[in-house]
Length: 200
Image (tube, rainbow, N blue to C red):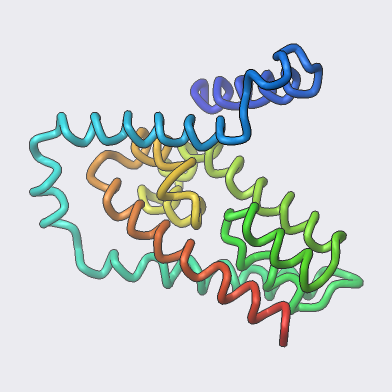
C-alpha cells in the first residue's frame, strides 16, 4: 500500500507542477513521456538480464496463459455490456467502444472522438486513464486477493509499457514476458474493436 501511495503522490505532484507552470516552457518537449517510458523499459531490461533463471521460467509457463489476452478482451467487453444496462443516455455500443480502449487512452479517444463526437471521446480518455491508474495503484491488492495475473489483465494494453514496472514488482519477473505479449495482443486489437463498435 505504501508504494501505491508513493506512486499516487508523484502523479499528483506532476499534475500540480504541470498546472502551475513552474517548469520553463520548452524544457519538457513533446516526447518527454516517450523518453521516460524508454527509461522504464531499459530498467526492466536490466532487471531481466540480471536474472539467470528467467529463461527457465519462460519455458515452464503454462501454454494456457497465452489465452490471457483473449480472456482480458472478453472480460472487459462483458463488463462493459453489463455496465451499459445501468447507463442512461448511452447505448451498449458506446460503452463497448469505450471499453475497447483497454487502457490505450490516446488512440481510442481519438478514434471515438472522430466517430462519435467530443463528449464520448473525452469519456473514453478519462475511463482508460482510470484503468491505468487503478492498475498502478491497485496492483498489490490485486495480486493479494486475485492472483498474479490480475494486474496484467487489469493493465490491458498498458501491460507492456506503463504498468509493466508495477506488474514486474508485484507479480514477479517470471510474468514479464507474458505481460509484454498480453499488452501487444490487446494493444493490436484496440483500433479494430473501437472502430467496429463505433461504426455498427
